[in-house]
Image (cartoon, rainbow, N blue to C red):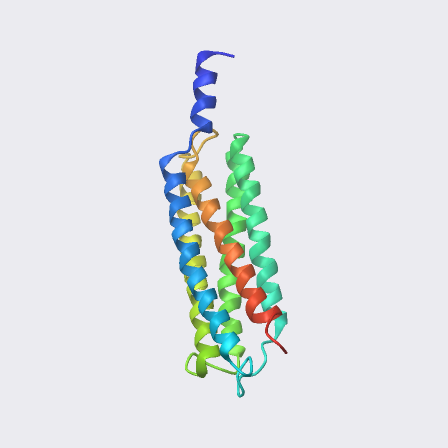
Length: 195
């Protein structure tokens, strides 16, 4: 192994600034969402009926499709990460385009789901928690789509390589976090809420 290869291997194992920064940002966002989940469970435990009377039961169909879309997008993005680690820039672009398509589909379908619900933000504490928590998540998905769009531009212009793709790795960390948060929201609002 040459000296250059040893140096490249050491650099690859070191945590870069952008990746460390994203890990710290995701940790702060995890605490932010944990606060909302804590409030949700506290309010739910204190409520005699959940969801409160007057709130129609949430249909699980669209939410399940949303979950499949978002979980799939994480797998697709991870294939892009694997592609660039092999030095396959064209493969990265294809996988990133797929991830962006799935992310945009998630946003569009969630907006459609909002239009089908029989309650609003002002319809009691359940409606408030539902819309605040899911719309904050949706804002994070939108931010992730923008971030990955910028990474896609970097990939298209040849700025990413096998040895330099920290922005992609940071974007993947964020995207997987957003995915995990959605699985929590799906579980809390659609699977654990009595129908």
